[in-house]
Every structure is written in structure tokens, then in C-alpha cells.
Amino acid sequence: MKRIIRKYGPPIFHCINDFGQGSLAALIPFFITNFGLNYYQSAFIIFCNTVVASIAQPILGYVADRWRVPWFIPVGFSVTLVSISAIAIATSYEMILALSLLAGVGAALFHPEATLLVNRTQSHELGNAMGRFAVGGSAGFALGPLLAGGVYVFGGQFLWVFTIIALLGVLLYLYAFMGEGEADTDDTADTVDTGNRESRSKVLSTATNDWASFGKLFFVIASRSILFSVLAIFIPILYITVINGEASASSLALTAYFAMGAVLTYMGGALSDRLGFLKTVRLGNLIFLPSVLVFIFVPNVWGFFGAMIPMAFGVFSQYGPITVLGQKYLAKNAGFASGITLGLGITLGGLVAPYVGHLADIYDVQTALMTLIPVGVIGLLMSFWLKEPK
Picture 1 (cartoon, rainbow, N blue to C red):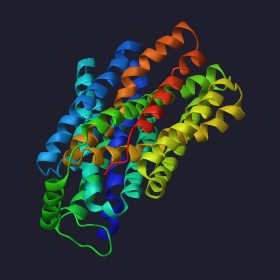
Picture 2: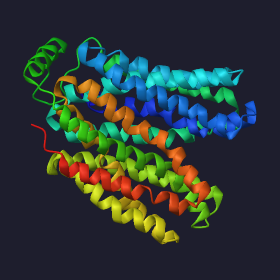
Picture 3: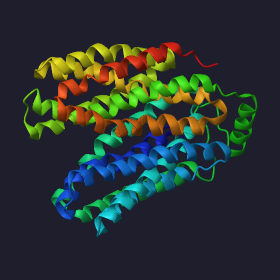
């Protein structure tokens, strides 16, 4: 039983953590109604969460490289979810901002050590394992808003359900990973924590960092992050303004996108074990570019949803392979690499998205979304400039 939980624990914990991250945007109408906020103030709540996570994750990833800090995992997702729950007792805008910042710190604590847990315990199937881990995050982002929607039915006190979820996650972590070490999930290995430390020390003693390749990979990370964030914001808007769909159904379009993403993220991880991590990233960008053109410029439901499938593959299939490539390029600092790939890989696009929105205000949604084309081209070109890690 513990062996199974060790195998599927990291994606479960990732899902739990991203429940909180994904729910924050869904609470914006709640903030506006209950605290009388304007749109700028509401957006600044998300911005604060995004910025602190972006800054803190690489730093905490470096800490995870220097010291074994497995407790970052349960503490991280607990801080994230309890911060969201505490919004139920917030009495001011400033308190909401503080809780949003704290939730970002929790996410920053969680991600680097969690990816190192995958690397340590499932190295024999790293592509598949990182794919499962990424799927957990995608599922959390998709399900978090649905869970947060309970506040509109039951009131703000419903948010304490996030704390209950955090408690269940902590109990699961303690059962599976504490006391007996982080044993490998392979049937032929049952190494205890001491053995893992010795093995990791041997790996680090011979590992090298390829900073030049990681610098090139950063452009691929930034490209994917912008594609992910901009599409997540503008899919409902495009559905309403261009496809002339019902506003009530626009959220279902986004749900469909994230649901596809959860499946395609796992497919990307499995595919990378067969094709290679770099080839999977290149394939994702190659498929994305023509499909996003159809998505933007074919103004009907068939073009919209038909192009969404390959477009989602292009975005989500890269997630796991990019994370693994970062760890391989910075083999001596895999935690720091994970902080960049998982931190900036999600949040950087959130910093750029408002400028795309400004273009949509000046021109129109389709014109603004054309910015995704050069962004995708940059990601593709940089992926061909990269070399396979040693």
C-alpha cells in the first residue's frame, strides 16, 4: 500500500497544493462583492501571489539543493491552503493581500522539494513520473475554481474546506514518507533514507551544471509560460466575443481546456520516455503554431474546439519534459532548476498577460492573441538550439 502511495503521492500533493493556487482567481467576484474592490485591486491580489511565488521558488530550490528539507512538501501545501481558508475571516483588503502573498510562499516551498522527491524515488521512469506530477498540478488548477465556487452557495466559511484537504494531505504524507525514508518505488529497490542520501551524494560528486544550455532553456520556459497564462485568461473571452457563445458556457470552455491539459500533460511525460525530452518539447511547439492560427482565425465553434485539442497538446505536453531537462542541465542544483521551471514556468506568463489584455483593449481579442505566434516561434527556435543533456 505504501509503495503505491509513494508512486502516486507526489501528483496527489501537487494537486492539493494547486487547489489553492487555482482557486484564487475564482474568488475575485467574491472579493469585489464583499470588499467593494475595483478590477485593479482585484487583479493586484493575483499579481502579489504570482510575484512572491516567482521570486521565492528559485531561492527555496537552492535551499533544497543544499539541505534535505522534505518537510517543505507538507508545510508548503498546508500554508497555501490554510491561507486560502483564512480569507473567510479577512476583514480588510490589506489582509487579503497578505494572505495571497502567504499562499505564494506556500507554493514556493512546495514545488522544488516535491520535484526532487519525484527525481529521487522514481528515476527509473522519470518521464512518466514527472508527467504524473504535472497532471496533478493541472488537475488542481482545474478543480480549485470549482471547489472555491462553494463560497457563492454556502458563504465565505466554506473556504475552511481547504484546510480540511490540507490536513488529509499531511496525514497521507506522514503515512507514506515519514519514518522509513523515501524508498524507491521500483519493485527491485527498497532503499531507505540513508541509502538515498549516499546515492544522491555520489551523483552530486560527479554531476556538472550546463548553465549555457539552461540559459537557452529559460527562453523555452518563458515561451510556454506565456502561452499557458494568456490562453487561460483569453479562452473564455474569445468564446464570448468572437464565437458569440453564451457567457454562462465560457467557463466550461476553460474547463475543457484544463481537462484536456491534464490528460495531455501525462501523455507528454510518457512520450518523452520514448522520444526523448527535447524532441517532445520540439514536437509540442511544432504542433502548437498551426493549431493556434486556426483557433484564433476560424470564428466558429468547430474551429474553436477542434483546434483546442492540438493547441492544448502543444502547451501541456512540454510541462514535464521541460522540468526534467532543467534538472538534467543543472544536475548539481536540481532543486534550483525546479524552482525556475515550475516557478517561473507558471507565473512568468501571469506577469505578461496584462499587457496582452491592454492590446485587446486597444485593438481586439484576435489581434492581441496574435502575440502568441512570435512567442511560440521563439520557443521552437530555442528548443532546436538546445542539445540533449548528458
